[in-house]
Image (cartoon, rainbow, N blue to C red):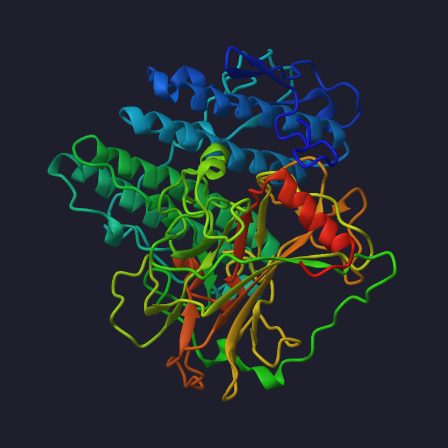
Length: 578
């Protein structure tokens, strides 16, 4: 597909053939024999999605066909990466190919189920079709059905615990053996039982059985944690926390399905699947909470280094005036990290720009929506998690384990900036951008971005909550990654975009695009110094992240007319202020 803004072509739908209004994609079914390594004789096979679907309502067919085509394209791209990585080992294949593929398939499958559910009964259990595997023989050519070769999922067959605790959360202390990082830690998970509606009598036995499985899963993960105390954070994440999350997803879905057979199916429970490492036993994921250590006097934060501009750089800026967030558009969705999953963010988000953005948004719906921006050609979505003043009991209905009174920014600045080393090229329509990581705390700070500062001290940015001096206002500054791979508008592992290095140079093979900076200023947030657990404010987060300041993040989906995007690029490259 040609870049709508006249730049290099990009290919989220590469290989697509449009037939009768739907999309068919031919996948490579031949063995990957061009390489001599382990992967050369292997191909990726996935369960068949199309064969498991109910009768598709006519009104949902186009969207279902589109997402089935995406499933096929995802497998093709994964097989291509497998062929290029024949010298790697099993851990690389699992973490760099199969797991990102599974994440993409989960999103596409959820979109299929949601599309059908809008017109009829939403199918359940499809998420068990997301995991794929590697086969030693070539898979047959697919037929537009979201599979390269049927392969049964193994994620739904688990042993049950004999005694249900009806909590869906546990944090037994690991064995005291071992002296490494894992020895003093335990795994904590959000409480599932507390989030369930009234359980129908006909579903109670199955729900209890799966709640017991959730507790058993945590106990087994904690035992493995104790045996692996000499390992590092990456091992804990990839070998313990992530497999635990996969098991919890399956059990939680079985709970929702059991209830849904005899009553209204609960939604948003999958956001409770993620667990984290803590330094002691807790009761469900957020009891430790914030302390004074999570806050810092802004005057003690070192000055941040900035890349030096060069003659070949682009120093212009473009402002899009989109107003401030309001109660009229906030929700607990995240279109980038949890597309198709209503209430999947487990936190509240504020928006400016596109007025329709939610988990179920499509490129088409975004393009047709209204905007809060004064330039109506900018229908981009700009969003971030809500900030709350703590110690106020007036917001008891906050999502997840969040609490406090939500506070809106007094000003929101949407600014597109240049690159200190080169000119910029146009962004593609519907580019997904994310700065920061909502799971950064449980990942040991990986992908975290320093976003917090104060007015008058904007050359000092920190990943802790800042305490601003009198007369200074709290600020959040989100710089989006601004190096694009020239092809994709989204990716499961977010590798379609990258940040420039310290000098401002983009990674090899990537090109500079306008850098979006979102700046939020708050004029009514207390600057009271924290004492112990008495803290002044915090940002919404997943329950597993306990409102850690380093989970702060923001996202955007670019929806601009070609004319406006060209103007943005011209202003930046001509060093103008627009």
